[in-house]
Image 1 (cartoon, rainbow, N blue to C red):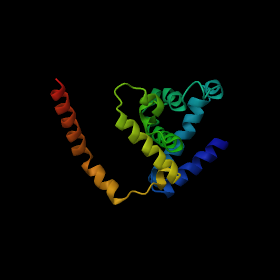
Image 2: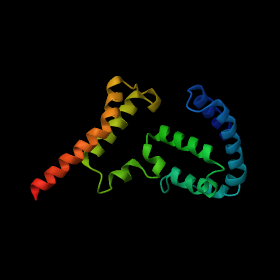
Image 3: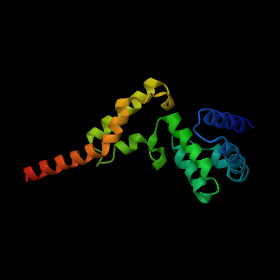
Length: 163
């Protein structure tokens, strides 16, 4: 099977880049083979007729993985990783696209700008794994919680001044 060979290559790459432990690679490959044999074969017509324009791949796959979450847990983690890396959508983990998430009313302009900046930085680097983590980024992450609390306090003060 071509998909099995491709998946082995993906796992080899993830092990090589130390993104997954080598001992997990064999377990994940076994889970993948079992998923193909037990799930995909039984629902082959659904997989064959999937319209990528009508249904998101992560949502489609989630309905099959959610049936037996624990059995395919490691495999589903890898599938999510692949989807996130290939599409640059960290929100795949929550099963909705960035564009859909941006339509949510409570998403502030700063969040929208920050998400777009992150996507552009990843595109410029070529791959999420190639983004260099510099000292300033680490410091910013360490200070993020306090910055957020300061921002909330400022918003609260502005709201009280308006009233």
